Image (cartoon, rainbow, N blue to C red):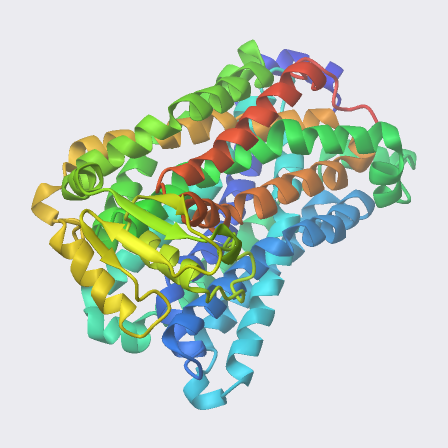
Length: 543
């Protein structure tokens, strides 16, 4: 199916076969994202089950490390399965990736805990997470390429936008199923064994997805290329060893996927983290508000995918980058105002100062989760960040003890066993709430702000699949688009929470971490404006 042959299809209604292609590709990708997200949502429970041999704080750190491992290996999955997809075909490659993801998820559900297997349990858990990360690295490029190569010219943005809904729908499904099971069976039973059910239920989704995908034919563009013998014999070398193609991959990374990743993770995952960890909203309440915002905003993926066929991919994505960069600060400040007004009042009325020798303070970047920061300065700042206390930094003389000033009170016990209790009592007495009071949360306005954040996600994510597909020729498309996509999302996006925490701890401002997504989105705006072309009208059947 060439673009020339399908130009008339731009105005024709979607055929039964095209609907099947979109449904099957999207369903499998929803399933993979669901698998990936239930681990993160249940991270605290998994820490107690699989890392029980270490201290509770360290257990949670290692659980996050296992979660991060899934993100870190995604680019390697893109290389492995991207190459396979350009050599063997789109259909069979994403059948393999989906099966690997499903098997990995099911085995997490039946994996014995640390109490039964000892150290073998966390080792196997991390190995399963690596398998899931590799599989996810190969799934997206295959699904997006497959759908785009079936789409008529003038509708690629609309067709591929259905794939773009899958990550949000996967997260929504994970939250909904976990909340449903947890509510139905009660907290005690869920913590005991019910946490396994979301993992085990995925085997049903796997079976349905495989059955549907087996009924699909190979991509017509790949099939034609294979019959003509023009497919690439060395996709990796051709995609990244050739500067002409390698340059496109680099520009796609910095001009599209890096910015898309930080807006996506900022608007969905960091927003949830901010609600629960920074402003101390109850986890179930936060998850429900996020789920409502996702439900309301998800049609935006389709809307902006469709609109990108009319006015172009580039304009919409650049608008999303710009809006996020300009409005992130007021939106997150507004979330604090509506979700925890007592915290906002305490921040404004009781300023805190950390007086320390800057040479004794670290930049607390916990990319792997295993880093430790134990100096009195680091301990003091970490404790303040954990309680969402804004503070300013004041330079002390070399060798001087760390002093935490709260109003007229000074605390000099940082680094000693007495510090945590003394600091906790002091900040509580100055009005900093330990949690967000449920009766003070303005749920409607909080959801409105979360909805706006997700709309930005739909603007940058809805058109990106079509844009990436159109940047690369058919012979290396699977490989070429997969690597920049997964470096952008796996690394720039996946490590956003750790980077934000480090910035907040260094500056003392709970909003300062937003500079990370703002700067990255701004870079993508500039690179896209000057170096990336608009692609909506190109012929993607070129080899």
